[in-house]
Length: 226
Image 1 (cartoon, helix red, strand yellow):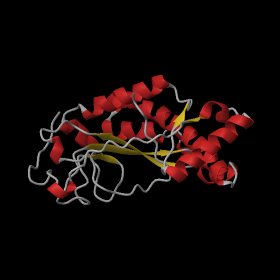
Image 2: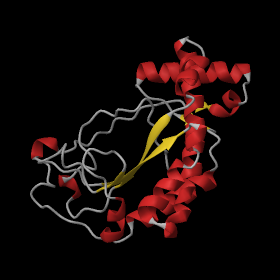
Image 3: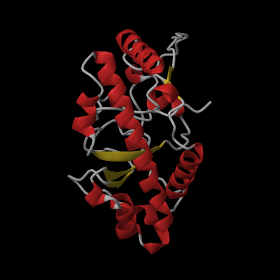
Image 4: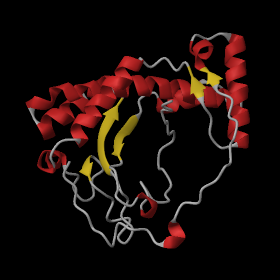
């Protein structure tokens, strides 16, 4: 792994350090198995739990989401392969100023004095049938034919898009506006898939993986790894 260190800029000031807390919260998971198959009782129960969690915490948990764990594992392996490559190879996908797709080692334009300790790779996904290979084509164009196996992210994005539409339907039900409201709006969604990598740091107490920010996305999903 090749990294460039900026000693002074990568250290957050003392007033930005994280404070340890013993706070524990209980967020009952919503079971999507029955919801995705349309079982009335399961749909009602999942919507109720989502509503309760959003009102109480601002986020919710789901289980039995239907995404093949083998696909998730394969996507993670390929992600690890990319970030383990020499910097010269990763720079083939270098993100240009003003663009959102590509590889970046930090968001220097946003954190000029507090660089986040992370690397990212971002690429576009579209559910539009006319863009059915947009992810695979991206990697072939910017990385070359040797990276055709990165096309796994095409399948991964498709699975996550399907899941996201289902969750948006669930949110619509929980809000009382019906399952079709958000589905019709997002069914041909155009999304950004971002892979984040947080390398080991010699002084982790002085760094943050990312600084305070607001996500521009409609829905953010985080995989819980136990």
